[in-house]
Image 1 (cartoon, helix red, strand yellow):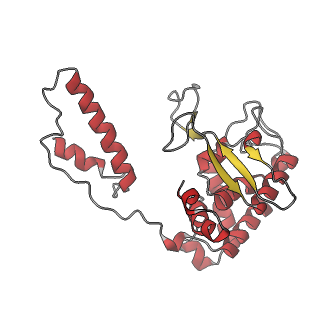
Image 2 (tube, rainbow, N blue to C red):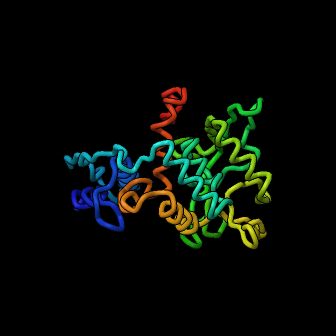
Image 3 (cartoon, rainbow, N blue to C red):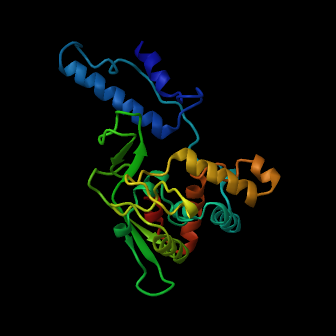
Length: 258
């Protein structure tokens, strides 16, 4: 039974495919911790995993190079977003130019954006957490969203991220053009003409909303063959492109790894 449970850890929920190495490691740690706790309460004489010899399957966690856009393709995609849903161009720009995860962009506030000291210079983002969608009733705030710390960091940790000039221009325009949430978050749901009206709660942009906008941008900016391909199929693929691009822009490798 224990071995069967371990084998299940290696399967991705939803489609039954192979889970990534990081997902397997995280689930294995949680499972092992729960069993260790049970053993400590004495219902179990020993830790059930101790006598079991099990090695996590090896999976390739490398980025699919076919999904990574080049700089010209990225600029075309962002231009297509600007033409159709201009309120989202800074959202996608943060993923491409600063390699932010979607949940980090959703949590980004104006006071976490350090503007360039000189015009056309580099700025910085000082990330403090992430905003994720959860099932109704599971969030700490009683809704469908939950504020969390940064991935792989202590809950109170922060992460500085360089902001290149093109991203600073996007953020400056967004802040000047669109009303922000009461707490200063930039990426929130909007209504009305030009999507400028912010509902009182300032809810984060749902994944299906920015996903729909991204699909429209792909169809406008890419060739039919590219649309059918894995190229930038998900918004997250912009982050993969950023990780490939940043060393060439002079960002230290140690900072890219963060």
